[in-house]
Image (tube, rainbow, N blue to C red; front, side):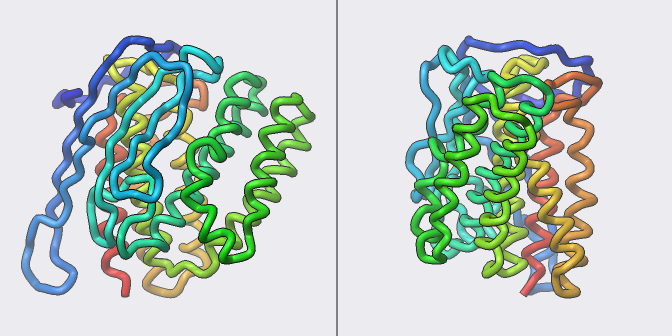
Length: 312
C-alpha cells in the first residue's frame, strides 16, 4: 500500500474485508549516532508485506526465529476471518526492523518485553470489547495470546518460575467464553497482568523501552492491514493495534515514574511521540474521526527506538 502525501481523514465505519490485499510502507529516519558527533542514517523501517486473505484459522508461526509470520484474525466470528501476513526480520539490539515475534540474537530482554506486551495487548483489547458488550469479538481476542504467542515466552517464564501465566490467560479466555460477569473477567485480567509485571522486573529500562518500540512497529503493521483501501477494512487488526498501544502507553508511564533519571527522560520523550498516534484512532470499534495513516505509528516506533538507544 503506498502512502498518499496527505493522509485521508474519514468518519470510519465497521467493515470486514475478505479480499486479498497487499500493503507496503517504508519509512526512513535519520538521526545522530549515539557514539559520534556526526549525522548518519540509523533507522530504516520497512513493512515488507502485509496481506489480508480469507482464512479459517489464525496463528503466528516461526516464533523464536528472526523472521515472523503474523497472521491476523478478522472480527471475531471464528470462521472466514481475514488473515494478515506480516513478515519482520532482524530484531538485534539497535535494529530498526525488530518487530519479529520470536527472540532475536542478543535481544532476549527486548523480545520478552515485546512478546509479553503483545499478549497483554490482546487481553486489553478483549477486555475493552467485553465491557462494551461485543462478546463475540472479545472471545476471539482473549484466545489469541495462547494461540499466537505463548510458545515464544514459555521458556523464559518457566526459568523465572512464572509459568502460571498460561493458566491465568486460559482462565480469562474460559471466563469470556462462558460470558461471566465483567467484574470476574477484570479480576482475572488483573491477576495475569500482575504476573506479566513480575516477569518484566528483571529487565533493564533500555530493553523494556526498545521492546515497546518493537511492539509499536508491530502495531503499525497490523494497522496498515486494518486500513487497507482507505477505510477500516479489517476491524480485528485495528483492535489489535489499539490494544498494543494501550500497553505501550501504560508501560512508558510506569518507567517515567519509577525508572532511573535517564530512563525517565527517555520514557517521557517516548510518551510524546506515542501521543502523535492518537490521531490514527477512534474508539475500540473504529468509530469516530481519524487519520488513516500507518506512518504515524511507524514514525513513533522509530523515534522511541532512537531515544532508547541513548541509554547505557
